[in-house]
Image (cartoon, rainbow, N blue to C red; front, side, top):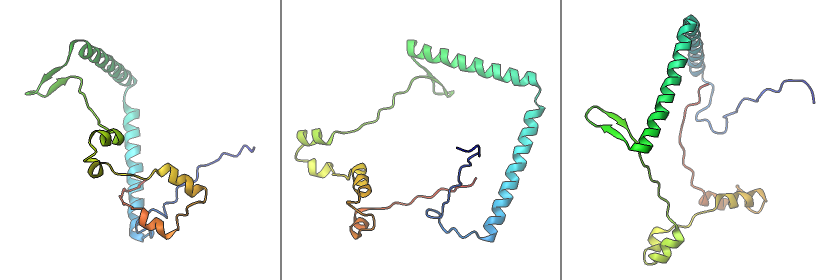
Length: 159
């Protein structure tokens, strides 16, 4: 093994990008965005460096005290119950959130008359991926176009 430092290869978004054409206006706007971010980071660094050390220590101590106070409050809520003042928007309580999942087999045994309307079969994706990996099914088979439904969503990647 060599002593060379291995650098991570940058991601190539060619297969998933929408309208990727390296347009001049986009490159110009991107470079402007880069510059503005560098400038903003430099200003933030100057602000951080100008804060007196005693204020940094005081901030850390205040944050530690606030975290300790929250832990005491959470224990108090657990032991004694919660508090709310709706008019003023003050709350110190534990909220319950319930997620439900349903057992299709049990539903079918209790309500067989509704089983066909409620219970839907699905494809085991991991098993399908195994068949594809094993070469038993191929993604370029025409049947796959009828089996797969693709839903697109979009996000901006700006680094």
